[in-house]
Every structure is written in C-alpha cells, then in structure tokens.
Length: 153
Image (cartoon, rainbow, N blue to C red):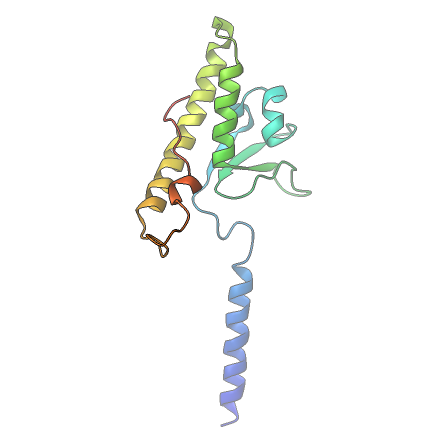
C-alpha cells in the first residue's frame, strides 16, 4: 500500500513535466516554412517586416506572431506571420515600378508569395471545412477570420 501513493506522485509529476515541456513557443506551431532573408526583398524593403539583416538570417513563416528581433544566442531566425507576410509582399510588389531592372525582384517576391499562398490556402480550406460549434446561431463568419487571398501577386 505504501507504493501506491509514491507511484501516484511519480505519475502526477511526469504528467506535469510533459505538459510543461509542451508549452514552448515552437510546440504548437502549425507547419512552418523557412525562407532566406532576400526572399522578402533587399534589406531596405524587407527590414520593415523582418527587421535588420544579420549574418545568415533565416525567416520562418508560421501562423503565429511575428518576431523581428533575433535571439540572443543561437542561429539568427526571424518569425513572420503568414498572412502578414502575404499582405506585405503584395504591397511591395504594387509599389515597385514596372521596369526591366525590377523584373527579377518582382519574380522573387511572386515566388515567395506563391509558396506562402499554398500554405495559407491549405490552412484556410481546413479551417472553413471544419464544423463550427456556433454555426447558425449568429456566430462570427469564419471566412472573415481568414480572408481569401489572391493566388498571385
């Protein structure tokens, strides 16, 4: 009988540790994509979205908050919200003058947008196809939570 309380305590501590380990910033993130810093344009353009460029800066697009500041230690990784990045890329492409000098940059921004669009549209389709608990009871229109985006810039 004395082993039962000790076992219950050990089991309870193990469950607590498992729950706490699952609370890290990266544990609940849906699939993320990694991009080079230059995929968002040259530094003067991209710094508004992902902050100043560091050495070997990688940008991770995810369905969570944007983090422009690099970590104090470890690799230089910036996090950007997928929807925010898509709006940013569309805005930057519209502002670019349509000259032959900007064709390569426009193509790079378009390619980055296309990769983000695939991820966004998959998540949006899954989100809208799941049954809603408040459907038909005056709840919020779920299509407004993840608005439709154009497939290209």
